[in-house]
Amino acid sequence: MNILALQTGQYEHFSSAVEQAVVRYPDARLTGLIKADDLERARISKLFKEIIQIQDDGPLRTLYKLGVTSFDYCLVPFEDRFGIQYWTFRSIPIRLGIHHIGSYNRLHRFKEAPLAIWILESLFVNTVARAIVLVMCFGKRVWWRLRRNLSIAVLFVLAGLALLLRGLASLGLHPVKWVIEKRLPTGRRRVVLHIPSLGLGGAQRQLAIFLERIDRSLWDVEVVTVDALDKFFEPTIREQNITIHYLNPHCQLYEVGLVWQLVRYLYRRPCHVLHSWLHFSVAIGAVAGTLVGIARIIGSIRSEQPARFPWFFPPWQRAIDIVTAPLQTVIIANSNAVRHENQQWAFLPERKMVTIYNGINVQDIRPLLPEQERQLREELHLPQGTPVVGIVGRLSPEKDHITFLRAARFVIDVMPTAVFVVVGGGPLHDAIRAEIAALGLEGCVVMTGERRDVLYLIQLMDILVLTSTSEGLPNVLLEAAVCGVPTVTCAAGGASEVVVHGETGFVVPCKDPRSVADRVLDLIRDRALRQKFIDAAKARTRILFSAERFAASVEGCYCEQYGRTYQQDNKRKNTHVAVEHPHD
Image 1 (cartoon, rainbow, N blue to C red):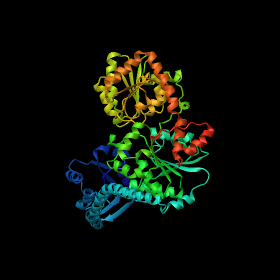
Image 2 (image 1 turned 45 degrees about the vertical axis):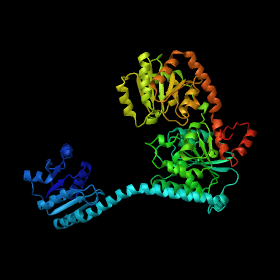
Image 3 (image 1 turned 180 degrees about the horizontal axis):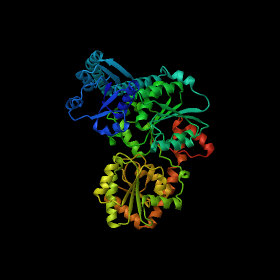
Image 4 (image 1 turned 135 degrees about the vertical axis):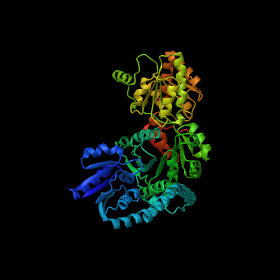
């Protein structure tokens, strides 16, 4: 028996089909019609008596040209289920008049048919079945485009319903709230902390710091988040014996699906306080919490208005922020700049706004040992005794690394021994690399990529620079202060609330590389000034940005009478609670 085996797709699937044919017909003589790239693999397999390369004008013309048309059996593998996309190969046994055909689909199902049945099947598959598939594909494309808009539309409908229920709740007529209140636990108050992910980020780091210090004798804490790939802070949270509940992100209607899952969770496990972090979760949490009837809904916003980040936030973000603003009990901002911008952005009333600065745990900063410093310098090719100026942050537009690099050019023109380090990864990696080349900074700038040892890298620096155009309250400035590294920062968002110009560091205008360079040179040249800034920054950070102060202030927001109950409890514990409120 002469068998013609057609390679219709990947060689692996084709080879599997040929092996099945050999099992059925061990004495057959196989001729393989093979793609040029796989000829050598076919020869090595030794499955074929003859190998023919498919020419550019197609498999059928290749056979006609060579006069090879006499076969008893044709093997046609498919990489789909029914061979809908394979009319060219289906037609070969028909045109050559081969009476027996075998097919092998993606499910590894081997099927044989006589020529007459093969003709009928091929006609049906390539007309009726193909038309059905095309209609289904078109429908999927339409649904894919519509479902996003549908999800957003339903989200706004649910937000409107939540506003209605909020009004009913003020009259004591919320249809679910009384059921929830009966099921609330006695003793410790339950708090649900809702955040988009537990991945590596500033908000997640602050959440972890807060969870380490919240008074567990007063609060029963749970974390709800989306099941994302990046779970950097999950081990840290689980070590504290805190329950984490994951929401499934694979919903047909993403936003509505998350709201519905959160509603179900809050109904099953009602809480006294729902605290959501970051803009998207703040809006989603407000809707879900109000639908269920949660008494106290708190949102933490940690960046300036979303209009500054058009590449990240959707165009409808402002609308949902405005609609859900009345649903919030308290909105926590991590700087006054964030508070004022978002107050204007979403028309938030002042009475609901509060500023609580980020906290940093001084005990978490481990000093860089001499041997570790030597190894890091060798790894990054940083010579001993050369000034090291660094920037730490995601390689994204708002961090404005271009200003940092242009400032580096000015500094190196004056002080050629200086070395600059860019710590972080992100979408602008290639663009920043290209700018380094364009400015002639190869050999002067080191890009480390994403690192887990950021605090050690900061301690390796003589000066830390922040050139962002928008910030909430940058944790890296706090980390630099605790690590004993003087800073030069642009006046973006809350950065100027961390660094006091001329006292704890330098604050310069955004997008001004010359000013950045001048201040960096001032610090490189003046050791006494560097030490003055280091001492002042450490003292200020311990007072204003301690982890204990941050955690106590957030806990104060959880109490119904705005911290009064918690402050009374903490007076007995000699814990200072500090919350900056516009009416205090």
